[in-house]
Image (tube, rainbow, N blue to C red; front, side, top):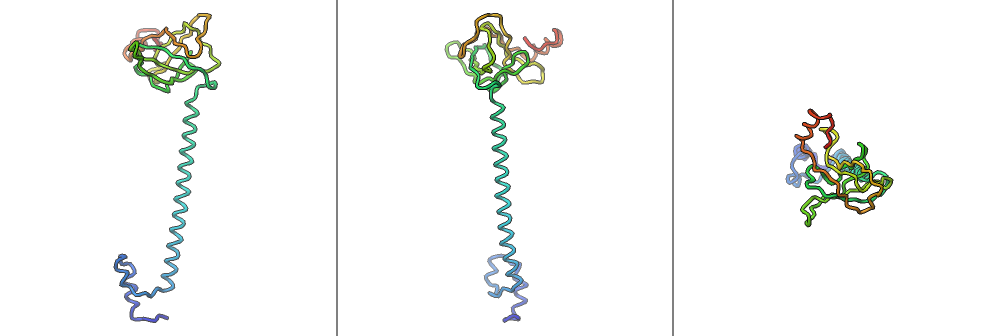
Length: 194
């Protein structure tokens, strides 16, 4: 039973009105409207809870990807040791590039800087601690295939003395251009190396 039956048509007319017009609505709220208001509040709580759960899942996925990315950037075989080499040009080589020996990844390039004394590119790289590299090993920048990224390639030498950690290797070759690699592949032995 309504106290003001003559206002019932106004309630039906003003119910979908904008907020500023609802101030003119009589202060009479029916039971059906009270239930609708409670259901609206419950739906807001549920949507907030869902948003928090979704945000947490996104953050958890981002943390998982970050840990995976960090794990793949580590040098194989533990911490390893660092060596460096000077190149006339380090064109095409980037920080984080693979260091390959006989087509097997044995390390990563840790930095590429310009040596101010010699005006040459100074490439620092980390090798697996289980690998002992002869002092006369030859380093070059290239790729095994036309589609692969450039890597620091090692051709092991025959010297009996091994490069100690932190050593500067002096036997380096200039990086080959794409045209030279294609020419070597077509007219040479089919090998893309220098």
